[in-house]
Amino acid sequence: MKMLINVPETVVADALRGMAAAHPELTVDVENRVIVRRDAPVAGKVALVSGGGSGHEPLHGGFVGPGMLSAACPGEVFTSPVPDQMVRAAAAVDSGAGVLFVVKNYTGDVLNFDMAAELAEDEGIQVAKVLVNDDVAVTDSLYTAGRRGTGGTLFVEKIAGAAADEGRPLEQVRSVAQQVNDSSRSFGVALGACTTPAKGSPTFDLPPGQLELGVGIHGEPGRERRPMMTSGEIADFAVEAVLEDLNPRNPVLVLVNGMGATPLLELYGFNAEVQRVLAGRGVSVARTLVGNYVTSLDMAGASVTLCEIDEELLRLWDAPVRTAGLRWGM
Amino acid sequence: MLDADFFRRWMTATAVSVGREAERLTALDSPIGDADHGSNLRRGFDAVATVVAEKVPDTPGAVLVLAGSRLISTVGGASGPLYGTLLRRTGKALGEAAEVSTEQFTDALRIGVDAVMALGGAAPGDKTMIDALVPTVDALADSFAAARTAAEQGALATTPLQARKGRASYLGERSIGHQDPGATSAALLIAALAETAGE
Image (tube, rainbow over all chains, first blue to last red; front, side):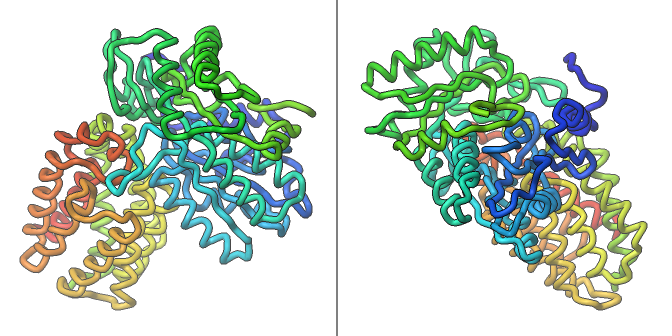
């Protein structure tokens, strides 16, 4: 397997050095693995800290900046960061107004952020938490770790970031983040597995004529395997899976997200099919975002996320944002 | 009686064993997880071996608390907090005694294993490290060698189980037929314990 890396052990640090060189508006602490917007802490405003395994870029470091995250903590590839990183990030961005941790629902992320919240509170930092669990491919029961956090994370981070930018207090920012999560659902498909630098071979074996339905963002297999389908058939399946769980009466935000190895030509074509299915179901679309935002290294495939919104959430979505991975209005 | 040096040697032996078996752990983690268990634990236990050699903690409890804290700071994922809590809580339960008996250690380890179950919400049969650790505690009353055998059998017995915790749980029935990497690494920890005791 050929990769543009030096050695597997330094991929995260090497990427952070490159990110620092490309984005002088960020403070990148390569050694401690914390990415902070350079103007933090912003007086009087709630700070947002997120993080998770590396390999999902631009999530989360690419979403640090005005209007979105205050800091991000990248872990090893597909491995959650450690509490030390989160505490360091919280201390760097807290202006006294408190910090919201945006946590995707994976056992490791939850445990490490919980430990970090305790340590940060010991240091006098007020912490609130929102757990993102938008993935309808997982049965949320006592017999799983619960629904995973995937594409909905982008909606939560953008909209809660805008709410924090308006100067709202911590509890209100947390509440908006929770509302966005509760209104978001995702479903992902893989056409090919990804390869982690440490392993050097695909994380699961997907024969050429097959696709995997209901995949997560860590190269873990999905819930079902089928013979390859057309873009239109995949859109039918994915959107229906989301709508089985979310019955929107209001307009929705749509994220058609690439997993890393699917070109925009295919993603835009897939989006055309997604919009067809939504129109057929009478779902009104307020805004659409197409691109690679919550990736899974070099996995081929895509996910669809819908977020049902009201006027207030739409206004916050449209609010200016300036980050490496998402930028409009400023 | 077991002194601080015994526990330092245990941690070092675990680092050697995890380093040797890292690729196997990662291979076990590949079909049902995300193929990083071996590399994550190797990074953590290498850091543990370094810190217990540099700081030379002078009680059994201090060795395990330091080792557990180091794992939490270096491993990440679920393994960091879970293994970190196992060692920290066991160490705290040992208190400040300069030497502990096997019985005292067994009681402390039981407290550590209970803390892991509380943190992760896992019970025996969920296809996790708990399936190796619970039989270990019960067998330690007999001997370190019996504990090693119990842990290894516990790890092997996870193969036919359906995962209910962690990333493997997303696979549902497709997790059946794969040995759990967490239970396997827990068995390595206990094998290193028996080796350190000369059994």
